Length: 309
Image (tube, one colour):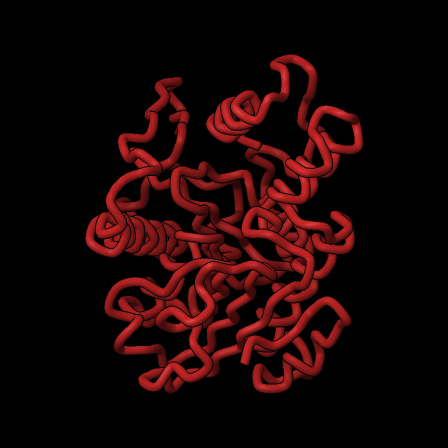
């Protein structure tokens, strides 16, 4: 997890009563600035947008699994909204957006700003792939040559899911998306989409019945796959599923606090289901499996995964 993510994690765990210094995050499987493997061809790109106030790193379990199956996952920090973002020169920018901001700030300010961030990142990746002098900071060696800009997807949790849907609406380069328990906000809620969107909700999602999450999204012509995972809560669809569970097992959080945060589902099972859903969906959309996107619900059939109809 990047420094800003660790700072955010420390703050919120302290707020939950977990003593500072009583825990440490285990290392992930990622490595910094490693060169891309030579001669492996090009790979689809998946943008990742975190939830409101969150910093990249809370979707590591999902991102690493997708990367291990041949996707280039590009996580986006939405600076000045994210809890803390550390830049290469060492400076850190903290959030200027309180979590208790008026609801209108989400569709009117945050989502448009986030969409602009996502489109800027795509522009920078295209410049890097074309070896343009307009490209920003250098990517790890050989990675620019491995980017398949004809296959771009996006996924995000909570407001990151909102950002995914609106980015697809505004930018046709994004061919498919996954909304992980986020509201449908902005013009996409009335205009709909003409490309596939997997909508993976928690068992207690507050968005059921709202625009986009209702059974029939009248203006939507693209494939809509609304599913939910039983026994989960909103933050289950992030790395908190594992982190909070481990803290409860160690006796640092009560069972009640744990269940309120991440539900009753087994943590390993939940992560496996999330990874399976994301991989099967993107593989189907980008023609990397023999399953069509329309058949993906059958492919994902598990006792804990139910359609939201």
